Image 1 (tube, one colour):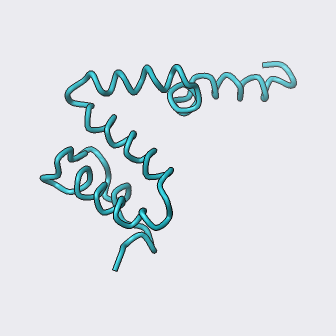
Image 2 (image 1 turned 90 degrees about the horizontal axis):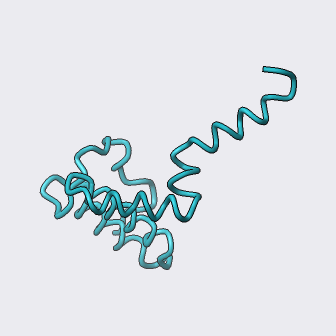
Length: 100
């Protein structure tokens, strides 16, 4: 590459990243979520994504209950839509998240 190509290369990397294509771009996000919903083996991942977005929008006082529901539904073996592909680090409760 020639001088000054770093920014251009960085832009190309952004264009091909999952985050840019499937999270930040509205049409890409919609299409990817529809893909997840349409694949039986990936439907739980799509549902988890939607629920995590709803969790981010909920009131602070509702977050403890919402987090417990998410853990029970998606993170616990035997949960309605258990996402067994998630690592234990991804499913660990964060400090201050647990309710008394």
